[in-house]
Image (cartoon, rainbow, N blue to C red; front, side, top):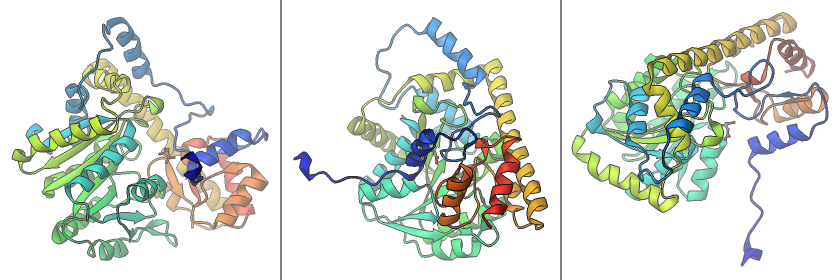
Length: 394
Ligand code: LMR
């Protein structure tokens, strides 16, 4: 039977990670996979997470199963973090998942169960793994226009025109903040307009929120998601703790299904727990427990928020520096969009050939679509990147 298996296409982001590791050049720069790095290139464990881990080691008395939905306290605290008081607890069904990707997958699984004919409308471009998972699951996909490579911003008119093609019951997948891979985001005015149109066609928004706290701040980054749940009859939310708690390998995420009609909660909650049981039974607990401890303890929470804020403002400074260096070196302000973008990523908007030249000639690794991880830079490498961008003629 195994001889029937075909080689699967390599995940581009993960293949790049491997290629970077194998490159012997000492001055190489990794702007590939979306992992935060400090100025020394390390991905530290956040202080509050480390403190929670120590406390957990002391206090935890059992490793017995939690529940199919994970610890309800994790769901409660994550609901507050993401949704604040935009909803009541009775409106939200939620399960812990293995990372944000697990939440995305479970969300699609729920859609398939409820409405196998639904088309999933995704931004063009979107995180490549969205497309890969949807293809694997056999769900129909339709791209909506999103990135305007001339301005580095959002093609909002194109986006709305394409969303209007959705049918009732279709899903519109949105990035709640810090769009991956482009870094270009909607303004709140645009969000409100998009929400109106989604409601007008009777589609259901699904929000991937993987970078809360990396854009304009914890609250600001949740504002669009909160506006969506307040205005739409139903919303699916896949949120990740990988980046904002820096617990990538612990696989910690949550899937929330929000309905304006609280009578839906019991069946929806049961369905999400059922899907967990079918796919992996109990979700991982360690990372979720650290998160619920940090969020539930005033001191740990304050320290976590302060460190996250350092991370966020550090990335903003790097954006500003890079845009300034590029203005000087290229004698134009056409790279100003890099300072406007938010989150870990920016799409430079150049050809795959130029991306390859950056790798081959300068040891600079970014994803083939010219997505770069801003957190992979530091004050010393920004000028080097700027010069390389100018040298290859972008
Ligand atoms: C990324 O986009 O680089 C991250 O979300 C990591 C991943 O799993 O692809």
